[in-house]
Amino acid sequence: MPKCCFAGIRPKDESILKSIAILEYVCGGGFASESIDSASPSLLREGRAMLEALAEDWRQLPERSVHVAWDCRVGEWRVPNIVVHECDCQKSMVDTWLEIASQVDCVLVIAPELNDQLVKTITRLREFVPASMKVLNADQAFCVVASDKWSTSQCFAAGRIRHPETVLLNQVSSKADLPNSPTLKWIAKPRDGAGCESVVRFNCLADLEKSSALYERMSGAPHHWIVQPWLKGKSGSVAVLCGPKARLILPPMTQSIAMTNEENVENLKYQGGSGPWWPVEPKVMEGFVHLVLESIPPEPHGWIGIDFLVTKTARKEKELVAIEVNPRLTTSYLGVRTIVKENLAGLLESVTNGEQTEYSVRNSTVHFTPFGVSRPRELEFE
Image (spheres, rainbow, N blue to C red):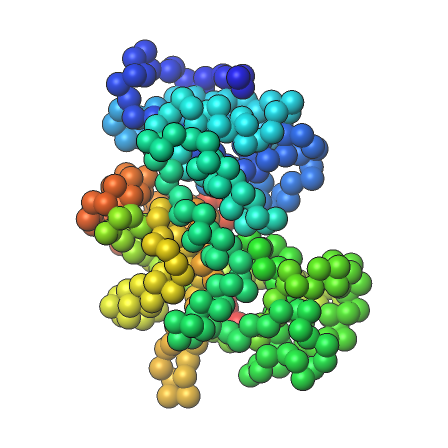
């Protein structure tokens, strides 16, 4: 069994409590068998921020016992009254998680799409946890499609949802093979990327090839990368809580994306965002969200994030462009939880139980980074 330490006082009679295990990949054992330095610093900080925020929200619900897996090399656990299971480097992460899951009646997984970690983890858990165990994540079939940006783009095309034209990198051998771009700039990204990890913008194939370290990675598995035109507009995201016969669309947020130039190739860096942000009428956003979710089979479940772009048509009307779908908790949770007056974990639980529920919004605008809420500042978009 994994070692356990307790931050705060554990309830005396845990049998009467509803228990949940919040299992986050980067901080919760994904790197237990290797150096923690091999984890992306950005994903490490983002994972910790989401895990601690969720644990804090869930423990505030009445009669709840909250369990987490924790790699102590990340640092000291900071949320009190949580059952903390220290990771054991002698065991695989999934085996440790299964042991923790055997002690609770509900599980929520936070894992990146990178290297199919999200799909693999959820598949393994669903294979071995009891049928009575509630898993607050999308099922394997939905995750398989939504975790693959190429497959997602095909679903968008079939659903006639506006989306940047997408081609596989291994289908691009000359400029003529690139998708049409009104800006004469393109984006290359891994099909299973998370956030802006390894996403670059380039002006021509020659510049992409000159970035030797990057191009070497791409050329080694070009079918694992996609190319899209760079479109001008404002980036945003909207999270949807999904359950049986119930969906709750949360306040949309902006996305702030910075650029750094290296060898004529620009690297994208996600810096958070602000909100609530309603770039279009709520009914228009609602229709857009449902179209996106219905384009990906089967029925979505849990927290689903949708990234989009707001562009202007020739008539200067705002138009929503679908970019990708995240079948997992996203960092916008950090901002949304301070905007919504109700406990966000409680809303997630209600919706996944099939209950129709509502929320109210605070009047102030919140600015957040991928690591938590930040001070107000102006966000710039290209």
